[in-house]
Amino acid sequence: MYKLRKEDLSVYRYFRDIVLKDFNEYQEKDELIFNNDRSTSSLAVYSISTLNTPYPFEHGRGIVYFDDLENTCLVNTTTISGTPEQSNRVYIYDENLTLLDENLYRVDYVDGNILIDPSIVPKYIDYYWHYISLVDEWSNLSAASAPVVVLDIAGTIKTGYQLGGGKKIIRKGNIYIFASSSSERSDLTELIYDNMYLKNCPLYDFERGSVLDFDGTFFNRKNNYDKTTNLFSRNTISGTSNLRFEEVEARNINLPLTMSRRNESATLSDLNAFRSRISFDLVSYTQG
Amino acid sequence: MVAKKTMSSFKSKKQESINKDLERLLFTNTLTELSYFLPKLIDKYVDSFSDLLLNLNIENDSLAKPEYFFDLYKDALETFEYVKPVSNFELKILLPDTDTFEFKNRLGFLQLLTYGFVGSYLELPKRDYDLLMARGDLSKQLMTVLSDLPGILDEEENDLDFYLLDVSLNIHNILQKILDKKLVAFPFSNTAPIELFDDGIQYFNTNKKMLFDNILSKSINMLKRRAY
Image (tube, rainbow over all chains, first blue to last red; front, top):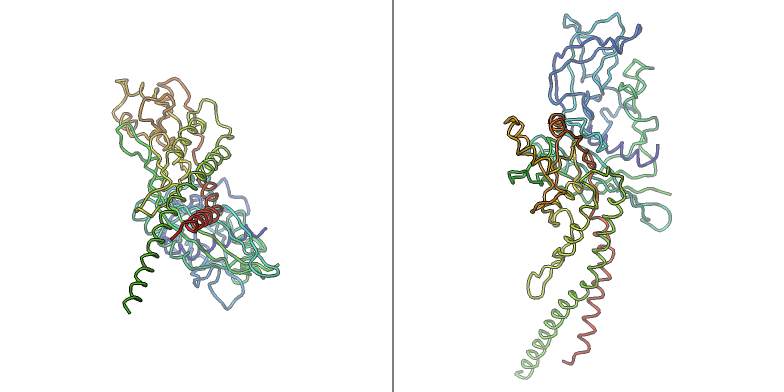
């Protein structure tokens, strides 16, 4: 994995875990439905049946997989070196509302599935989910309904910054906000702006990939069911500074710009109605 | 004492006159230098349009081909108010960008591109739209939806005008059946913002120091040649 991707992932973590954490929603006692298509003889898969809007398992949403963090990405306890999977974000019950042991099952945090031994029958679930869809590609936008935040790092400039070795790396980026109302747009824009202005975030190494495996479960959980020892590494890249946000600038985008037959401004679609953009430079310094 | 005072008042009057002359020279030289600089700047903006948009592979039947908007864009750049006098000796220089450029009528198309466009849309040509609206047999609900469709429209009748039909409205199948034709997909559906103005702005930023240094040195040299 090259540095640009690590920067992208680190900024994504900062937004997902720190900036937007107040937008996590709690849902109680949604029903779990047996998913025949995805189950096998050795593994039963249960899907969450929910009436929530927006749908919690649209692109860029999903279940929260970390417990409360200490205002730094990936750090929820400083006493251990890595970050454990959540232990108070998902609770699963059987039909008698008896709580199941969290080491009995795995959670697919992306699609909202519970993977469990076929001999156990879960029935209900309490969980926290991400109300804001956070995506890193414009093309994924229409796969989710508002509110959506798109993180886009568009360009790079590398310059020298001292006599001798070392580089200053400037990434040009934009955050696009697609809200469901003008008040939500104002809230999100202000919240994100304030968390970027004069702020920085750590640059993690992600030496073994990102937090979730390809199947949406927590990193390495299929090999290690013990949450206390299955930790996600939060090593930062040595010889490189934190990622600092500079030149942060926010503006609303009002797109009812084309005219309808009645000579009134016409809105293009739900997602285009309440938009804003925050442009920024992501600056870091590296040795060598 | 009186002589000293007269001398100092003469000096300050002279200084004031030099200042005024310099202001005047700066003002006129700025206008002159900009008249040489602006055509090059406009070329940069136009080149950027060509590089970003003219080589795209777009369906032949599409009314959203960027070449249909090229002349409009070029004309708008040429008539753009780059220099705005603020007072007798003050000028404000403006550059076309998403805030200052006037996206009126069919140029609204370029605003869609510079802000990015979410959702899947089909092109409904204005002539087909007018045919639909002239029919008396469409339901009231359908007529209401059609009345609110956003369009890329000229002030006057233009064969290239079209409306944008949101696929999620789920009326495109009915309309295609009525019109007995397949509507063309809007090629810039779900497209991230295109940085149409960036090259021009960057060109100005790269050259502005040289531009203003020229203006300043030219004005000072002209001032030196004057006898005070």
